[in-house]
Length: 284
Length: 257
Image (cartoon, rainbow over all chains, first blue to last red; front, side, top):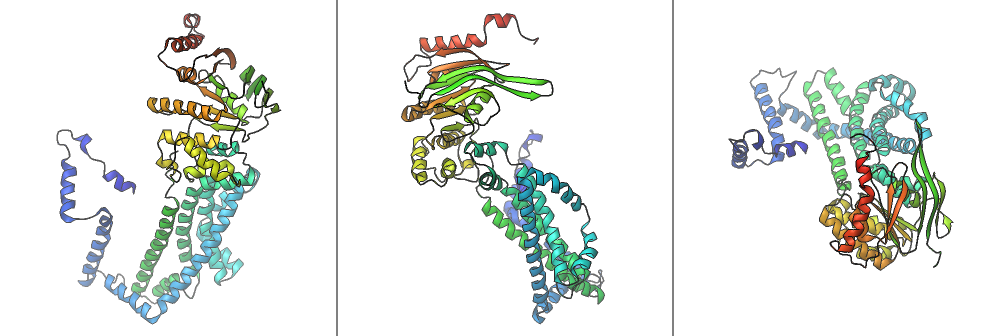
């Protein structure tokens, strides 16, 4: 969004003797090609795919290491036809849904508590902040040991991934609520729970949405880690399977599916947040 | 005269504890404000005029002396006092309606009072608008409606028009007069604009700084609406002006410039 805004700024200032030439030229080119701004983002990936396809077809890229996009597409189609694809996707999405819900909820509850009670924050926040610095992969053996190799360890790991961004963003959102708005609440004799419910939480809502989005991003990261570590189903398992059977097209197919689903879920949250924050151009 | 609704301030002293000891903000403030009176408090920045208003609002509880409204001491905020800040401070997630009715949640007369006060400040038709859609003047009107909606005995205005442009400010001053005449609440206006103080108030309290204390109280016995260009008006304004920029002070600056 900001990039679009910047590109709209005319370049007149720097070249007073040749006003608007660059801008005018660019306008003409764009008009001629009739490319809307949003379509510009597609140019690079689409032409990249075309070049990739071409290089693979003429044999520059090794077929067993870097198969053509069309081969990957037909691999995905085969998986879909045999029904395998839906099984793997279904279980991955289920893990994401459960883990994310669990982790994000825990983050919300803890942030609301530590954000509201200074004593609790002093007790807990340094500890949580220090846990945050542990690399995600370091948890894997521990989770396997504690929760076994079944679903619970995977969901636990995803929950952990979703927890931190949610907690950190919401807490800082709560702590940064404008004192001036809190004072308005005090004028109307709000205190304790009422003040939290009617002023602090609504004011921290934009931070909550940011936490939601980055939590979801990390959930996708952690599901890959969890499924690579040990699973018999799921998109992550599909990647390991492709690697062990030497089929690059399967690995690449899973990578693409991850990209598509990750982007899709993020787009859903983004759309929701746009609707939620529609009236929240914070100016007053 | 009835004691009902009279605001009595006696021997008020307020200080903040700092590393270098006490920093006295207000000292020896005695004021008696009649119900329905329009009082202006003027003073330079740092003279404690906002602190005085915050004490009356109940936002500052740590002070010495007595502050009583209608006979009972002020111990905290209450619906009997409405407060308008320098900025509108509307909640960005609520509509104009939601903001105005904020303090009345759960009351059965909420809808009626909100409607009345939105009408009163001239925001009819903007009930469902959000704060970011309002101009500065409109947002401040909404804030005034929010302060009045609980039918307070005292309306506290803390430099409410300081952030508005000159033309909007004059319009808002006329609006406040109209609202005051309609509602007959006591109004205490803190401002650094002498012209504004004289235009609106029955009495102008001049505060001098460090520590904030009452230097003089000037009665403004002029009929309303007042003509800012009239002889009497400019005379009173001049008198207040000279309290701030008197010759003696000009000749003997308190500190080197």
